[in-house]
View 1 (cartoon, helix red, strand yellow):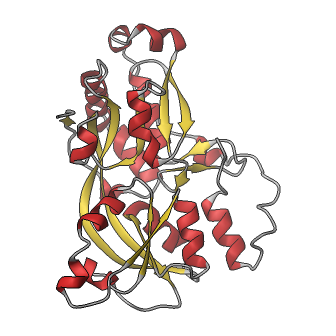
View 2: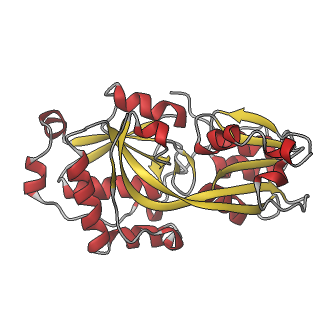
Length: 298
């Protein structure tokens, strides 16, 4: 799979006027990013694993590694780090196995589950009604949406009506894309020009489009938009937040793993591992008090 430039590095280069000069020589991954809290291995849970996973000794976990702080490439441009990476490994710890991260794009994760290309997905997925027709979900994070804008602007985004007349970037296959497509009548009802939707393959491409003034605002997860605004305040600002939306781990529909993975997440929440992982990435305000299974439905 082709790797996009690491988001933070790309933003820094653009801010320094070095775009087009490459990302420089990759260094070693920061040990502080790689070090993580561990879940507690339970051999009884391992015994319940499907034979192919037990033989392999690892879950194949789909991730979208251009959405910091959830998942992104470290300085070596090879190691995936982030909250989703740590959480997937902690879940696997309970099963006494490892993880093999599989980089992919948001629009490919649910079809990939159905095709058996990976065992589970941690990719800031919202368990929408459409996705639940084809997959099972286990909730683990209290996410939401954010609107990222250039520091040179000052318009607020408090509702979809504030997007009217603006060029809006979204990632293909994201919850934000489907939400705006469902709300296409908003501007006509307000007697204002419609927003212009621009689709991008990933968060990196969308942020770079915003930096180069090809779009006015990026509508994406609050985790990424807030992270970019905090890391590059001279370039970007958080123009607004939207309603909270639960984020869930994805599994194949009617997977034999669904109940056991739900139990593993419950254990991580109960023993404090979950909150320790959230704290490592500064995401404590996005914790859930409990987890639930959202089964696939027709």
